[in-house]
Image (cartoon, rainbow, N blue to C red; front, side, top):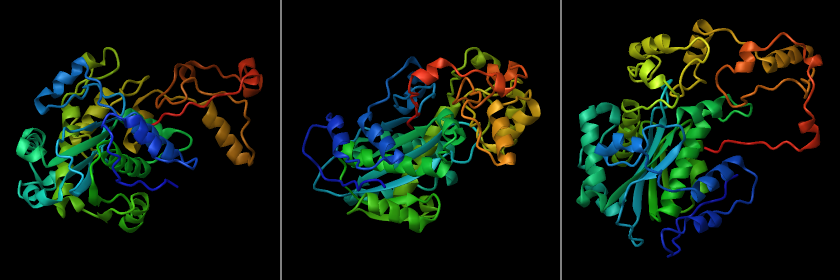
Length: 381
């Protein structure tokens, strides 16, 4: 279980993020706790690359090539510890088969909440693209607003979503969503030193149990977790707009990480939702029979799995064959069976494509593994 997190201020300089991570006590072996503690320690501005110019019009130092998950904070000057803040959390891109899932937190001084509510924030799906962008730019650039309000985003790359959901110890989308919310709250309170007193969250899963979880983690803060919170509470609507604008900007300016793909693969992939005809057309026309799709795709989605089964070359996975045989016989699979060369890969490997039909009994385990203790490398989101 995660240890409770409080909003107590220490009065130190904002740059002492390492000590903030040390103050976040972790007395358990919880993997979620370790992930969040690591993220607090590494909570820094994303380095600005040449591709960041793509986001220049939004005033964001965010790389155009989204290969890793990142967290970004707006510039907010009004951190007055004597006044409480209200904060809202929402996401964009939970359902699409491609692109990032973006979680956003928007917060403002309690005394400014009514004025923020009058700016026109609403559920991002009810606003046009132009309206969302205009509101986001106001929140980002107008001193009379950002002196009283701020925001933070957690953009989870499609690669990290795929790796999380396809690994043996599955890290599902609900867990990703909960941890993204907890991480944003923790960093706003502990790293940004915002005195949060009220929080409104658009729920993931049953609202009552999710609210209890957050109340246990953040004692002293009043939580409201509700369905369709983005259309009920203006501060959640503002978070919804931030999340949607940033996800759309990533898709509009997407830079493929794979060499040569930028020129050979169309970027007309639509909204990314499986029900979007433009997305389905792009998926069918862009699949490579051997290598599948570039990393913009979430390989764990059933839409992607089915298309790869139908349109790509078949691949025999020795691990899957061993497990299927073991399941039928009721026996545990041998620990010396063949392992895929790229353990975290979501697509077929070269070894998987060109392997010969050799029985597992003839495979010899490398002496490296009998002489040395294996080290498990785990990707932290």
